[in-house]
Image 1 (cartoon, rainbow, N blue to C red):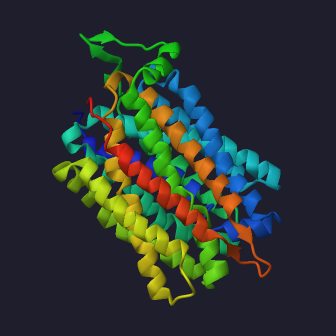
Image 2: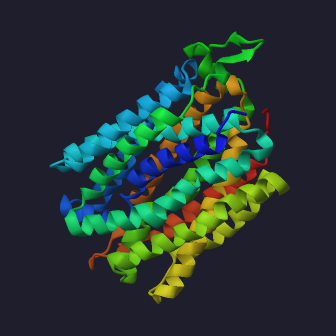
Image 3: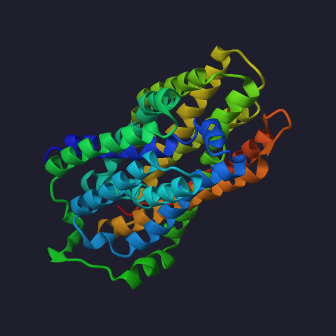
Length: 399
């Protein structure tokens, strides 16, 4: 255990917050981006998937070397790249430039997530790790409560790209805090009798190849992402185009859903530490099946009903990620955790890109401008969620 563990977790959460808002803000602004660049839903999904695909490739490359460096140095370098990419999005004049800027941002921002979780795996014992992961994942809730609604307001008042300027500016501030607060994090470099441990680049993927447990963890991560994010990119456009909600009402839905998860995510972490991560993951996943069906088959309803449906989705679909993430951090030893979590982040990003791509294939644009076949995307997400339950029960902890 290091000194100021809580402060370290807080800083990691702020870093997570900025890159999650940067990724999530694309979802509720789907309609606005389609109008701004005069693009189809399929081209919009490219804006989402380009970020994820770039993060996938960067995670694979980073996995070869990331365990050879102080975690602090790696975090700060990645964060600088993320800031540059986000500010480039803020000034992008064309669809092509914006698409390239999203890919550049994803190459750095997506890798930050895996590295942050590797730090948690290094400094927090397994018996308390679920709670710590829950605290880190509050960043998702804060992104929904504050980041996304404020981003929608800024886009409405000052233009669609204004949120990226604010995210980039905030990131500069958080970088300064991280630079002075995060201590050297080198424990993973000294695991065997105090000797410096280095895994060669060739060995990084060999270790995964030779470990059925790690391969199952990667497949589990990929399937879980498919069971969640395939429906996320079109939640806001569906609520606006099919249900008839305004942009401000959609912002309210995100805010309420995020507020619910602020209280629920730490609670899910506590439950997982107390009653078992697989058990709590399974219970939350069953609840997610119901909420996915409800939100993708939602007919025109009053705002309070939509609030309940959206809040239930945010709560159980996000809540199951707490025990799931804790399980994945435990399938590998500390000296290889950074590289494995980087590969795992790549699997997640591949899942994000594939999720958006599949959703774009299944979704059709009706003559009246509304979205068709959204329920088919829901059925796909439900099937992936069921598969994830079976895979989770085959994971084994080694740390």
